[in-house]
Length: 412
Image (cartoon, rainbow, N blue to C red; front, side, top):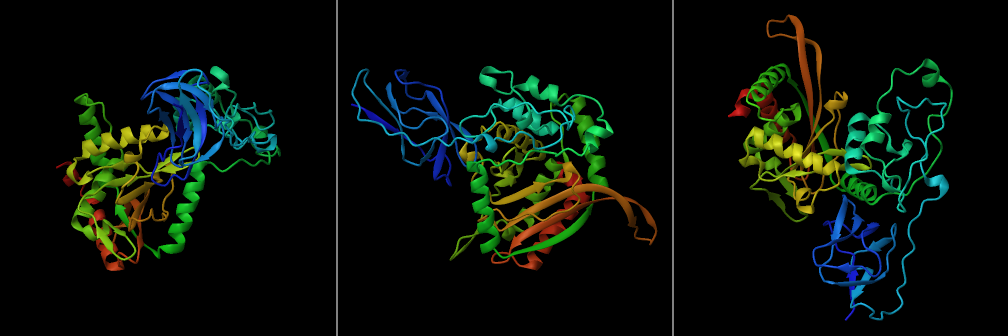
């Protein structure tokens, strides 16, 4: 007997999905647990697995189609079995003007040169391998400018590495008076739409306030250098970043001021007994916050390893829902791109989020009144005033600064 395959809810906030790619065609045999398609959700592009065995009799959702959760996407059954006419939702296809031709100036492509036309999927997304996306994000290469050499025009690693090379640009290429990009529009992705909804909800319903302090970053820099030298000698295959130390320090500060590790639930305030630490990871079309579960029970090296693994999976679009939901506190660090200070928007229903700026060398006033060279890092906590008051937020930052200025305790 024929059975419907419907759009599953692949994330807690998902209301619809885009059928990004079919791995099967009508007439193919399907086995339980076999990946039959890829679905773009509001968080990531995820594999869609079959629950039943049979033959794919009809496809109701072509590539690029948006389908509501529980909406029909295909029908399976016995070979040759008759099925009723399947009406397919119209796929979302970008117009010629909707495909972005250029968005940024690439170091290997002069402004005056015509940009290669990227190959886009039916959903309007540029087709690229997960590794190509990761390398492009690290090197600041705009995938929309590249022509793919992989199967079906997909952008692969070699394409990105070739685009990220090249030498210095001439003054004419930088200041030649040409437009930096063509006017264009593109459909809002599932992820971008979800981010927009949640940020509007956060800013319009949660009364934000902000508390900021500077920490002396020099002790942390010295300890990090010596710790990485020791890890290299031990062949530990791990390098500690500033973010790793900040994540661990945040956990210990939350242990000291547990009321910050709370959530607003309308008629109640939930103080969490465990610290599930989320951290922001930038993606080409937005950001996502992977979660280190039970971070209060993990040492610095474990937190560092998990952060790197989760970050890599996030950039490859391979996070599972349990890996990016349920966070109780979030850390966002823009220091690696030179941002000195900023304030982040709350990630509801969490009561607080920490924004971390770059460590900046500047003159500072010593305890004896002398002006000496120093290094400072800005820390700003955004707080939901319904849950946390100013004095509590200030105490949390005080403890966080103390931990970062005495980072040896984070190794214990």
